[in-house]
Length: 603
Image (tube, rainbow, N blue to C red):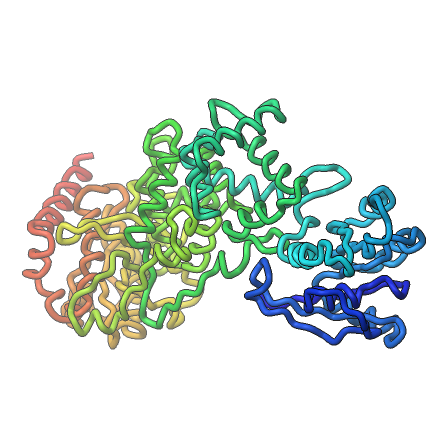
């Protein structure tokens, strides 16, 4: 924390503010007191909160009101000193503090000159101005409450009351309730809306370093039970009980307890999650990608298990909303249901849920980290930040040099003229019929060499005849043409020559709508001749009307091409290679297509 400033000010001279400063520093009452003390910085290691403290004195004899106003603008807390033994000084306080907009500590000095308390006069002033944190009665001469005075000043800056609590309504402010509610739901690890003893101890250890002793735990629940009607249920703490407990901390002057909790869960002084918490630094060099690692998947799977209340291995819309209830907005929109595998009821399956997180980590890692932060990843996993759940892959050029990759997620751009059936091709990857709505991404898994890999298909929405260079970048390109449109292949050939012919990106051609009569393409050579000339594998047939193993094998081919880009332009054009990839797939494709045509003629 940066040093903060304490400014001593009063409209009335001879209240002892300079004596207070000198008594603190010298640990004795000064016999000779100058009109104004020099600026003093107290080192962090001698302060209770371990932060450096810069003290500025003010003298109305030597300084003007304008100087005072300038100082107040710069300070973090004002200690307004009045003479406790003189009633007029006490009453003038309400006039003097009205224009101050930082935390204020009212200091009733010279308590040695008057018996009794002045609190009955001060309380109305404290209720009038929310900036007043507390009032301390002290004596510079007797060194009474001098250290406590500066402790409260530090506390007013580090653990302010104003953002948390409304003294007039005697309740937590709405922003504080929202923050503590999020913390409660994150800490409720079994989603039963109750913090059990185990969950309370885990929470206590996370925030304060040590679990509560069994008796202390019982004492806490007893206090809540005696003061609330619904704060304790099934021997655990409910949300209302948790909120009451924090209200009690603040009312008893233990603001630091609630602030320790809030800051552990990422909140700043305005009860907003900090950028450092939500967006931890993660460097992703050019040519590298981002994936969730084992820790990341373990965390999101635990979340799934927590909110899958009916244990059907799927999240209903309500369960999905509950999972993201700790986020200020819904991270996944309605398009998610067209992006990942779903159940027969249209719910997001466990597999689809993992796919969506994988897609998020790949496409927008910083937004993914933000969502993991809202969900409490650093706290529940006891890690410094969400980046512990992410792996940055090595550069693609290194994969090409070593002729192997460690990646688990691959991006395929699906490119072709409009009307080719690209959207249907994407939805078929999820075992779904085509939809009229456009969804640019789908993701699913495929088996490659007995390994499960994620394949992302991205439909490039072609507005112009040729792609931009950024649109072409991917792990594998799927160039799709319509066999019933004579102009269709010409587009694919142009795209290949412009963006892929000289690149290291492998290409797979797909002949769509094979259920329709094939026409001659207006390109200078047939698609098969084109593939032979450019050492590409022959076009693979696809039809949405026949989603059998023949059509589905295309997705495996795409994943293989992405995993082995060094074979682009060489062995990939060789039939032997593809037989190694998927033994018998070519035979199945030919037979399946022939049988389909025969059946179609009989109909």
